[in-house]
Image 1 (cartoon, rainbow, N blue to C red):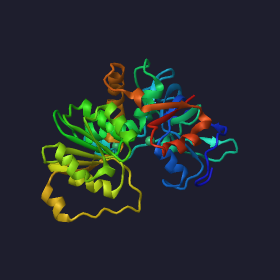
Image 2: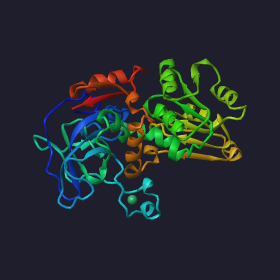
Image 3: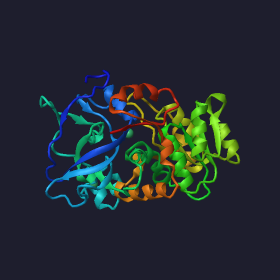
Image 4: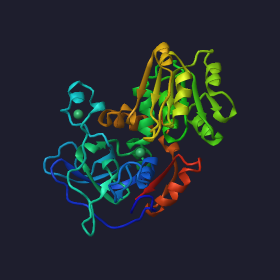
Length: 351
Ligand SMILES: [Zn+2]
Ligand SMILES: [Zn+2]
């Protein structure tokens, strides 16, 4: 696979796990925008990539020193295996770990060419090699297609509201962009006890999805001034927490201005390197509050995944609703096409 070329299904060699590593038999893996960014060379040029990173599966083998998981464990894979030793870990904030890690050994093509696993996971495969810390054990009665999505986009959205935005009981929240991450931010706001939850998008189908996840109001951004519309729904003040789930300067500015004084703006949408934000500095100063980027929803997988899976099993977090369709491994390219269509939250490969 080279930059921009369609994905291919090929044989790969997965080494036996060494110290600190685990081999996981993949049961499901969601198709995420980040996989497409890798394919298009938007992340780096380390082709060939082994794509896929929103996965659940069964641990098949572990390295000699691994005690955190064992063969047979049902796990959700994460891309935040924390080191326990960096400044942030030692400060008691491992969710910001500056030195997360992946497997040491490389998976390869049959000719020996080293593969670059997407986000250090590479789960569009029957088996993958990861660091044992990337495996989070959860309740095995959960449906893999649903809970595997906690491995990336859904966790990013839930955490943007619950962790980064610190949405509290009765807060008003506005979510800008209602794809998988935005809808998860809506669901996270519900779990956190938000009062008014306003979903904003250009596509009415996505707004309907956001309603199903618990949005109390929707705004189609093509139909007028979004900032005024948010203010009108929040007593003229703006929302306590505005969550930007697009990664676009114009949308970020809407979120910035739709926020109440001293409120919080969360940026969970991923911008591209060419994007520039222009903002009068006096507005930044004068409005107070907080501007917080959110990587992976500031989650700590070992803390959050088991709890969220329990909420799912109790019927309080509808992860099934994110699974628009299940597909075969060789249908990933077609799923990339549908991603742009607007009516797919997640296509999930089932192995
Ligand atoms: Zn660390
Ligand atoms: Zn992802």
